[in-house]
Image (tube, rainbow, N blue to C red; front, side, top):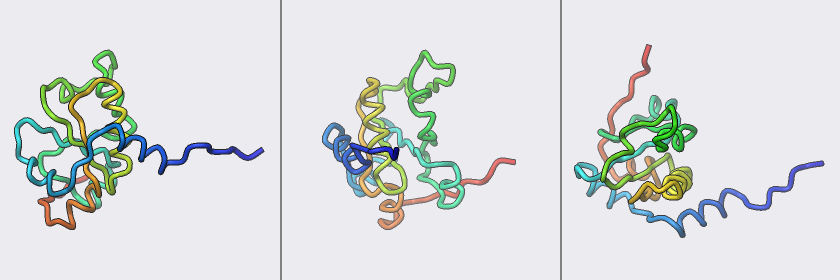
Length: 135
């Protein structure tokens, strides 16, 4: 018997955006150098190798997000123990909505995500740095 998916990704993303703040690329550009902001890039490492990244952003693979946020996890990262605003982005603004919602639901605050993601950042002429493959 085939699976019947009752809630698709569009509905999940729409629900996330109702719950969390969404900022424009222009707003992200305005806070990129703010010491009270941490830009979290949740894209796959291959996307970073191919496209580059926002300078100063922190790469957090989407599959590890919850484990890196939780201080009780063996994978916990101190980057999530700061009194700062966490700005999530992905390639186009869908995965980051879900990631920001998950972080918010875990208690991380404040969080938001960037509409149009990295593609929007590039289109707006935002700075990008190359990411080299580690050998």
